[in-house]
Image 1: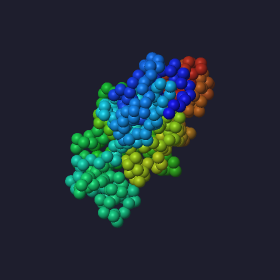
Image 2: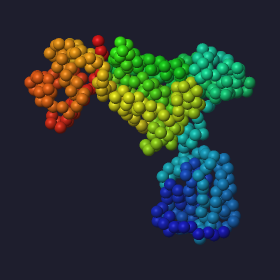
Image 3: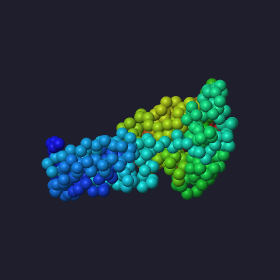
Image 4: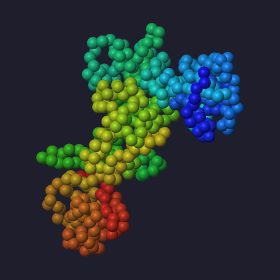
Length: 474
């Protein structure tokens, strides 16, 4: 039966595209072209048109169409297409497949621009992940029989944290959590179960799942001061990564009502969220990379391989929830490591904002990196020790007003207080307010700048000061 095609002349003029393929005859590549469209967004194959868009015609008999249908029938899983005749050509309309991936005798194909490309092994794995057909955390790992590799202590700790009773046998609980399944008569881990509860944490099968923590000297990845590889269960790794950060970050002390509170240089809540996010959403199919926790003099970087999952865009980043590893996410949620799906990014931002610190930055490519600045801390109503001027410690106490009766210490305090209130204040205005010469103020500002406490942005006339270093109170 012959039917019309809307904008047929336009299709000929525009040529082959992501959804259009021209073929002179129904040769052996037809199945791969149909397969490629089904694995992508669908499209049409015009048989009887050459690569330059010239109509050459083809046989349109019932027998010819039957042969085309037989060729397409080799695609697995089965795919329904529409075959129609228009003038002296045959048009095969291919819908986007609902049961991807599709393959033919020649392999797996995917439409990419105006071409159909055969997928290699790695591309097939990536395609399965992208389409949600292969979730690393739900795959059964028959190597790990639970009777030989079960960490009872971690399991019991998890149950307590999640509020799960021991009424059911542990086998049933593990299966219900998505942590185990049966391989024949043997109860074996899924990858999620092994990452949480396996006993042998030195095995090579999950070596890629460790967290690597590194403390660098300076702002470059050159000199290592401390390093630690965390290769335990997921929750153990998260806790130890946070401990590594707390060990190497500065503390300050706030005293209110005669009680002293230790305050970490960067809010622990933000750091914890970043570590959990990295562990939860990393690409575990990527065997050659680890979650990295890196501490530099000026920043913290927490990185996981795999970028962001499909479905996350610049517009919905921070609000939409797409779980690359839904079983791992569910297990962390049950244990209260994740409060609500999709809130982690905003929780980091809010924690930094509440601490009057610069918002975290996010770098997205093949990796996903959260960057916390260590040079943008604001001075509020707390005290600090500043190891700057002439390498001598000067007390800057913003809790009480009766400053130590020392000219340099008192003037340093007054200058920082004025800058905290107004970053655009000039040296002349400072000098007038505190009774020093402009030259004396410039000298103190220079010492504070060289000591890393202050940073000047912009020109002398139109620039502003930033307090860039938080140090320890006596």
